[in-house]
Image (spheres, rainbow, N blue to C red):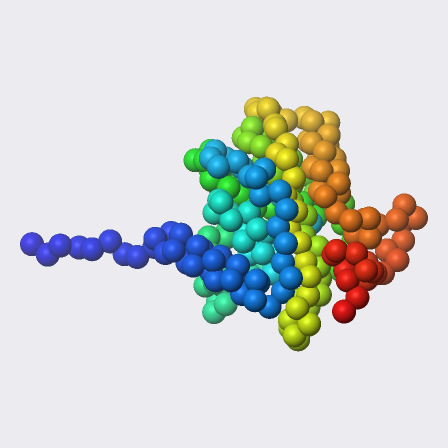
Length: 239
């Protein structure tokens, strides 16, 4: 009788690939950038968790993951990133696809499954990366998932990664930070109301905003005003 071996699945290789890439990235960041992580002591060591952040660059997910370090983050990523051949990388990294700007029930259920099994979900409440560098208005999906599962939300903020649009910037050892705030505790609600989702969405937005320097927050004029300007402070030094 011939013994049939199980077919390999993506999930078998994800942890080793994720941690290998994460620690390699941390080493590279120490070598080619001036990288700082603040607030890592706020990361819960166990249980379901949603990590949220502002979004400046496609490199933000692995950089936030390297900053959090203590937990493996499963990122919800736009479905366009999963096209072959390059779609192999996000799959091996443990990300899963979502159709943006529409009600993707499959992605929502997958996210809830990860959280109910004690995993960590990564989301960008803005829905896409900022083209101006300013923090954009959040979508309600993050708050809805948090309310349905009752897991805490960990607010994070990245600064300086908008410079990585030009790879040659590493020659100047750019400075950037990952700042981790205190978790937002959430009570589980079986059927969240629109008011509850709206209130938590605003809470998440304010928590991320509080971690960002003023130049990353749009002025109250309704105008974009361009990307954040460089200055001589810790996040945008003149080089």
